[in-house]
Length: 109
Length: 116
Image 1 (cartoon, rainbow over the protein chains, first blue to last red):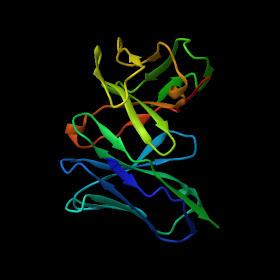
Image 2 (image 1 turned 45 degrees about the vertical axis):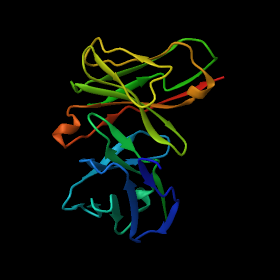
Image 3 (image 1 turned 90 degrees about the vertical axis):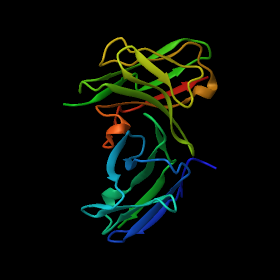
């Protein structure tokens, strides 16, 4: 079993749609969680950290469920510019981040 | 402008020919790391460094070397490249460690390496 698992997609959605991604992780001791965004052939960039209470940043909402060991990312009112690969990232121990393989999102007009 | 730079951006080489990929950051970050990214596998950590002269292995260190003689630079060395090291490589830096909870890594633009 992979340490961090994501549905690879692609998720093809029209502009304005709401889309949700889930990610599961295997290490119950993990304390920090993140979503990164990666555009095609570019470097990953931090989208948002994920806190236990859940957090929102504009159209993006991240949730953490420790009991079930999954993290979610909700994108509301999708824009064409949201098309990218979204990487789920979990702390895997001291100084270690474990990256999921990513979920690809394609937003079309 | 705060940034992480890598060179070269693209490299095609032959098996066994030593190469170095440079990485430099101008943010005075203590923590630096190298990753490789392969289709379907996500980013995997090769080596990381907590500070000058402090380096440690990540998940896939075999076939790679690193050094951290200065805070800003963290070169990745392939002494004898092999075709299975064909990959997209990213250098990253951070001012904080995971124990600080808030942990944003800044990535370089990537180096696409092909070993024939």
